Length: 501
Image (cartoon, rainbow, N blue to C red):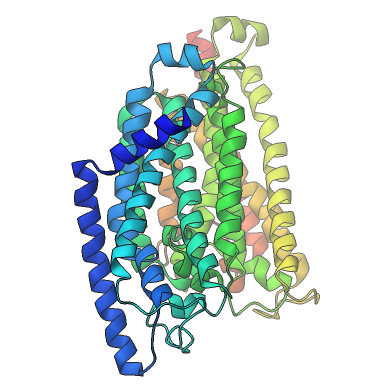
C-alpha cells in the first residue's frame, strides 16, 4: 500500500499543471540567483549553495503570490468537494473528516515540496558547494535571506528545514480554520470569502503594516527570515503558530459529530477568538517607548479617545475592547428576545419583571469584565519588564486613585449605558443587530471636535480624557444622567407593551 501511495504521488508530481508550476518556480529562482551573483560580485565575497537554496525557499513574493493562493485554492476545493454526509457517516465525526481533508492537503504540499526541491537542484548546477555558511552570507548585510538567518542559525541545513516547517505549520493552521468555519456555517460563500480575505490580507500586511504590528503580519508565519527579523529571534513565529494550531485542534475536539451540534459551539469559538484578540491588543501595546511604569502602560492600553489628539491604534483598541463586550451583550439580548414568548411573560406576570430579570446580570458582567481587563493589563506590563514604581510619569498630576476611579467607575457606567442603549434600540426596532450598529455609531463622537463638552456618552471612559485633565467626576455625572434617562425610556416602552398585552 505504501508503494502504491508513492507511485500515485510521483504520477501526480509529473502532471502538466505541476510542470507549469515548476516553470514558474524556475523563473523566480533564476531571478533570485542573478541578484545573488550581482551582490556577491559587488561585495567581492563568494557565495555557495545555501545562499541559492535559502533564496528559493524563502522568496516572500513566490510564497505570497504563488504558493499561498495555490494551497488556499486546493484547501477550499478539498473542503467543498469532500463535504458529503455519506462521507461523514463513514468517518464518524466532523473531527475525523477535517483530519481527512488535512491529509489530502498535505499530499498536495508534498507534491509542491518535491517540485520545489527538483527546481532547486537544477539551480545549483555549477554553484560552489560547502557544508557551512558562505563568506557572502556572513557579511553584516541584508542583501539575502542567508545573511539574515546566519545571525540566528548555526547550521544552514537547519535553516532550510525550518523554512519548510514554518510554512507547513501556517498552511495547517489556515486549512483547519477554513474547515472548522465551513463545518460551523455550512456556507460555501463564507469559506470562499474568508480564503480570499486571508490571501489579500497576507499580500498587503507585509507591505503596509508598521513594524510594531508584526504580530498581525501573516508573512512572519510563512517566511522564516521575515519572521526572524520581526520577532528578533528564531522561535517567535513558531511559538505563535504552534499556539494557533493548538487552539484550532482544541476547538476541533469540541465540534465532534458524536457529541453536539457544531453550531452550538459557535458562540464558544467567538469568545475564544475575542479573548485572543484582547491579549494581542494588550501585548502589542507594550511595544510603546513612552511608558516607564506599569501605570503608564495601563493608560496606553485604554487610551481611547481624546479632544486634543487622535490615535488610530488607540481608537481601534477601544472599539474592540469595549464595543466587543457590547456585542456579547447584544448576543445575550438576541437569545433572550428570541426565547421570550407569552408563556415566559406570563411566568413573570409583567414585562418589567422580565426586563429586570435579564438586566440584573449586566452590572455584574460589566464589573467582572473590567476587573479581568485590569488584571490582564497589569500582568502583561509586569511580565514585559515595566517599572512597579507607584507613579504615573505620563502626567504626574494624575493620581493612581483617579486612574482606578476612571477605569472602574466611569468604565462601569459607560458599559452600563451601552447595555441600556442596546436594549432600547433592540426593543423598539425588534431587530437586535440594529442595536449594535446604532451603538457602534456612537464611536464617531470619539473623534476630536465632535464632543468638545463631553456631553455625548461615547467613549467617555477613555484614559485620553483624564490625560487632558478633564474631571473624572464630571464624566461620572454625565454618564449617570444618561443612564437615568435610558432607564426612564425603557420603563415607558415596557409600560406601553404591558398595555398592548
